[in-house]
Image 1 (cartoon, rainbow, N blue to C red):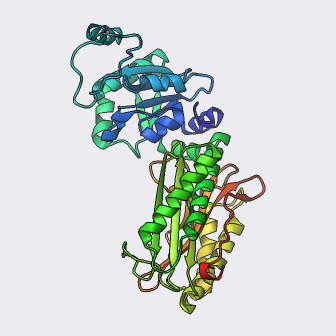
Image 2 (cartoon, one colour):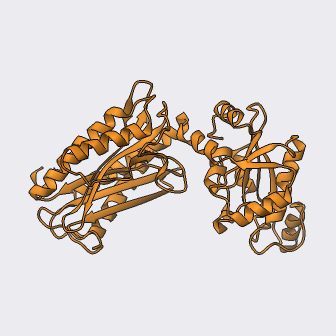
Length: 410
């Protein structure tokens, strides 16, 4: 099932003068079609998988993908018009087969004979896209491609293969579509946030002097996985940036009394990544660390107050930067104080809470607000929570205290 709001897409494409979107990034394909793009996308080239989203919200979705991925795509996206090209690896249906000769018969049933390409045949994929466009009367239309992903050489080949199409950059539309989440996307992010936070709870239970950074990471992962299992959902990935102590580059660090422990973590549910962070100590932190953290708390609160529909992302950054400056941090120029979260290729998605960003905060956006400070010789401090923007403000998806917690005192 596609996660695109087709009516929203129709409005955005109409405003941009586009007749369709052709999406090549694997994450964009999954977002549009509702199924993984397949292993051929590992090469990072355009054409292994292509999603076609007509501007007309009543027109069906279409896709180009490998014959290897076709079975899964057809099962997950039954209404999508799928065209397939051959890649280097087969995927045979051997149901009922009992002999080697029957394997050749299964190959013949695929309907395409001959040698397979080294990886995938880009020109074959572009030809299939051309067929789809022609059948839908879009072969001379204005079509947006996600050029923020597409390699320049592949875009040149696309223009040569389909010269009558008026190609444009569809990336801004894709970004705006992805920024506002559907209920299914929001639920994935809720689950991911819940698992990540459960991991932090498990991690705090093992913190004591002598415990290594690696042991903290393992405890966090175990807690996150246990929460997912208990909740009846799976994790498609996880990541953690944990630091211990004053040396931010020491990956062999162990917990010592009063040392800062910063955990910036996330889990992925169906490709959608949460993002959150907390800071702990075991024993009282230094006076300087406590002063810095107090400033971060105040700045976080100032930014959070500005996250409401109608405000801009830049307003949030301005409030937080002014707060830090007003507390004596005159040269603290953080590039952004958070971002959208979801199913992109990285943890941090556009739009960002950055200087002067005019993008409007809208209901059903899911964002991570962060207030960090990194100081070699003192350590890392960070507050980060994940929020759903509602009609009237925000709903926090986290429940752990945002304080600088001394675990030895609990």
